[in-house]
Amino acid sequence: MSTVKDGAVTAPRLKTSAMIASFADPGQKTAPAPFGRALAALAETDPRIVGLSADLSKYTDMHVFAKAHPDRFFQVGMAEQLLFGAAAGMAETGLVPFASTYSVFAARRAYDFICLDIAEPNLNVNIVGGLPGLTTGYGPSHQATEDVAIFRGMPNLTIVDPCDSVDLEQAVPQLAAHAGPTYLRLLRGNVPTVLDEYDYTFELGRAKVVRPGNDVVFVSSGLMTMRALQAAEALAAHKVDVAVVHAPTLKPFDEATVLAELDTPRLAVTLENHTVVGGLFETVASALVRRGLTRRVVPIGLPDAFLDAGALPTLHDRYGLSKAAIVERVLEELR
Image (cartoon, rainbow, N blue to C red):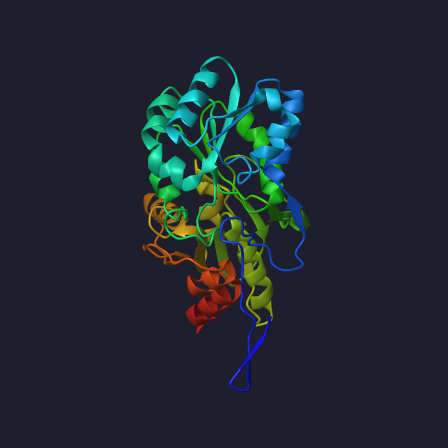
């Protein structure tokens, strides 16, 4: 609510629950727990599907699956290494595990178990990481701002960074059908529904041009595709025509689609909910160099730093992930 101080009315304070905050805008169309619902629905037709969690089923939407299929859900407690070791054993017997925890615990705490128990034997284990990037107001202990950078170097691992509920609902069965291990940057709770308005379908390993444009091209992943589309609409009022390329699969990366869009005179910008070190920006940059394409790419992403705690709207403004910050940055580049 607005407050009055020394006779002046101040702007309302922005608040979000730090742990279960939603990045959805007020009044935006959302879907509740799309990952958990999609997994529970898939399990109705595929008896191999099992779910595991490390004491965080409520905060990774795995509780939806647990309620629907209690005999196929396994709670291992606060033991992330055990979580992925157990999932590997289940996969060895022919089951298809989805193992959920926070991204920070999967990437930082259990890396060796994932690498040697799951990735090296190329098992069908689906790692579900909650609170990726700046999707929580908690500080560095829970903000997985470097998870993609950590996991990109792991052989055999497919990495998916979904934009919205459409991506999540369509990705779950494709992840289950994929032969090797996957890492999903989970969006949980009330997740925005955005891509249904753009004749879009998720295809594992493929990037999609969801909006054409003549002046600027955005290459984005995760929730930043939502922000890219919002910024593109706002920039149209400035007579700036923006294309948006959504790249939900970060590894393997769809170089052909992305580079075809970047090999033009348009201003090129990457947008990611991740540090600019080791994520989408550097994936795009290395692809350009390998193909012998010389051009500048402007990175919009999180800094190479430990981030502050606070309300998500405030933090997104502070670190340049908000629609207003993106619009301002593009206009500066075009001046």
